[in-house]
Length: 105
Image (cartoon, rainbow, N blue to C red; front, side, top):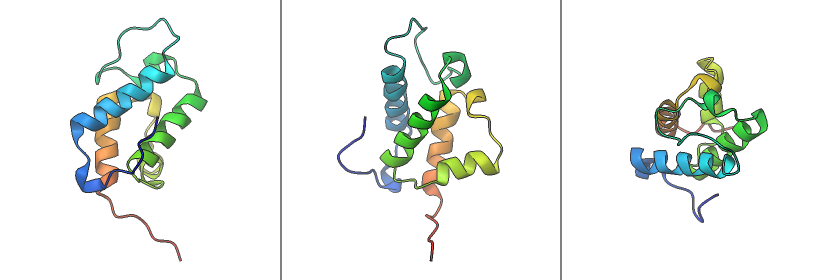
């Protein structure tokens, strides 16, 4: 699920980012018998396989033109993605979008 054009960091809104991530997770878990997903849902509680978490993060990074800033933030801060609730993931996306894009020589 990707949009036609990337979203500029200045245009990223909390509510639309939350909706986008919730839609992705609903797509991933569509065939599962699971509870409703909300901002308070912990990613680990969804029982998502690692490959689906990689897909989720890749889609989010692409949608918001983050390069590898989101994954970099997760690594630097030593954040276990499974321990995050969806609202916390949205906050990380918002913070990552405000960081300058690293330029490589």
